[in-house]
Length: 361
Image (cartoon, rainbow, N blue to C red):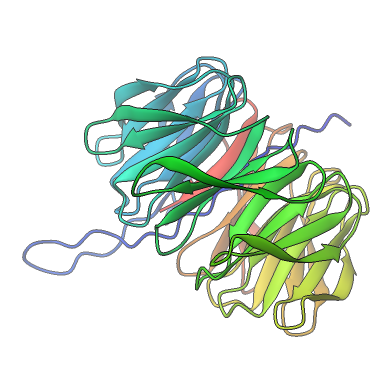
């Protein structure tokens, strides 16, 4: 079985717009990047159907919505550029040229004014002014930048450097690199706690997670987990961190208070993407090596169900109301829609060729 694992798994939880005269119902859509045919499939969440297919740059991969939900940014792996999509009209309104070897990571500041994109080809991060749609600076950060995350209060950006075993710290206000933090071998993803006090970095090369105190910008703990840790997600109440271990077919549950692994949860083959429901009761894990999604009950720390989906599961996201999960299937060229309450697939939606990431607004 051929498997392609998407590198980035995006979750966008953004409220719907309001009418000037009366409250309007939120209209939620899921955007799916199709790497094989350089398109984005637009899925109406209510009807579970594709309502539009948007042509973007060559080999579309990364996808993220601006915090106000009006615009989507799509990175193009082979074109070193970013397509800007107006959500209301469903059209590409601008193309922004980036550094070389754009990986696919897009992160917005909470106020939506600035976006950051990692470029592995020239070891930089492109800083984009969202209002003008221009790159205002290109910041050299170190070897092979990979993951990008913005602290929830919007003051710093963290960039994992897969080639130099470190994390670059960028001051958002000045747009400058202020510090390099040494972490474990070959870091991949980084996630902040909701209060922004702590960051967790998955160190894929030495089976560990580096815990960074953001105030002092120092590693305060290194936690042993399974082989090839990759995906990381923090529960909304900041009590538990979930880390997927791609080569051990497991998920490590880390207790935030004690900084220890409280359980190692067996899941399917080659887990990567992990998404926690907004209410913090369940974690969904996409198993790329088999056609399944493992559902973990956060309270018990056990897998309560295994949902069969299509081949090549990779990207995973949960709707803002927490009722539905979307899973991309790169081999079957489809998206499975999972009803959270029943744990069943309610729809299998054909999309473009090689779907990778999914984001919901």
